[in-house]
Length: 116
Length: 114
Image (cartoon, rainbow over all chains, first blue to last red; front, side):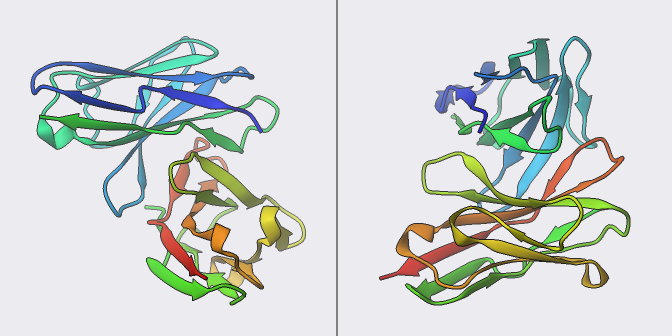
């Protein structure tokens, strides 16, 4: 299957700083990438849909100014958590769909963010 | 709002036991259905999917799932589990025409004991 790489795997940052998470499709072009957040013992919650060359579409309740998404190329989407606070600590996962099979999603390994 | 329910949060089985994990969704329209698995320390991986046709779908590693439209269910089964099946299993649904958004269930943590 297709490979999605997410970086970093884990990050610890101080309150008030910003953190950037990268999501790359390594062997395919992804016009659409998705960003999820997973709380302990809970499901993956979709945060936003990232479309190459256009603005991301955010789910209800997700602050677009806090979670900045950029999808500058067909293989890279970034999520920047701005002015991070301890409540932003979570597991963030990206996924991408290939153009060949639009409905099968491939997932990155996730990023564990801890804000201290 | 569309939701996906997985009733079993934790399941413990002995090797060779049979497995059935429940998944129900609330949307009444046309859906595409998926089961994903996450082994410890690894990415989410697709186990199997249903788009249309035969409601009994077979996936990797001996897993299968049956789509029962009247029950809004897509239960995952395996006749004989192995220790290596220890993982977290997620059911997911896409409502066709709904922006291709995957909605996940809360997941089921399966532990298979030797």
